[in-house]
Image (cartoon, rainbow, N blue to C red; front, side):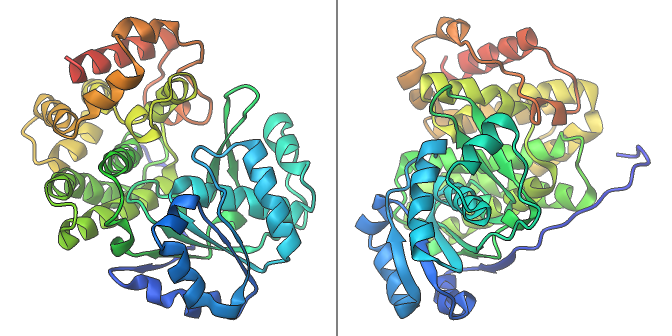
Length: 383
């Protein structure tokens, strides 16, 4: 792009990446009082035990009740555990929901009250002037969300189903440990959804008003890796090389998105998850082919980056390749479980145009055109 504007790329997260990277945990904890935040699934898979053994006496508390799609209430409940532990470091191990919960909990701890989060998200209450949250060490166990390298966390309002984002430069994790070995036991359904989430992060960084040369390079790398890596993982779930490539793609997609935020595809996804229960990664990626088609017409230079990354010959070819990837990964089956027909989309009450997301997109889009775009995508994938 040659619009003459100045661009900035910044990401302060210290990253350890590669098989066995989890062995750096004790070193990165630096003898601080630690609370471990995770889900019950991590306890069942034995990952929690590995973390606790590595940290030893540094662990002053463990909280295993983090749930998918964290809410204001669930984050406030988790905060009570952190406050009681008086921890200096939060180790968040799990998917994006765990890491997002850690950010909300850290913010509440800095504010010093369990009433702050609801007031901040629902009423726009400010961050404290001396906002100093405890450090976060993020350990993702899925390849997709990118939350380990961003400063924001997604929090749902259990009262209204509205989706909020908590964001502050001091909520970037201090460190991230990305160990592909932790993803080997991830179920197929989660592997697919998180890989498509990463693909969405990368493509949304390209057609974004905040794109810059560094985010472009990271996004292109991710887009080029994900299709083949995902196919290889689905064919051989224990393939270490494929798992490492997918984890690498998710990480660089997260780095790209950390400077651009997401855009229209994520905006359209919110009612699908809130009202119909569609997994986030599927909901935020199913419109990617149709949005790419639109970008190809309005901003061919931006679309060309994605076309080249997919090794396609044209926008139409890239669109076909994306739809083929969705079908081969079973995205249509996932969608049909929640959406019986395209007609069901007409009953959605939520807006597809979310401020802070849709307005990052290069083209202004209205509700009706977003709905038509979504319908086309659904019908093509589920045909």
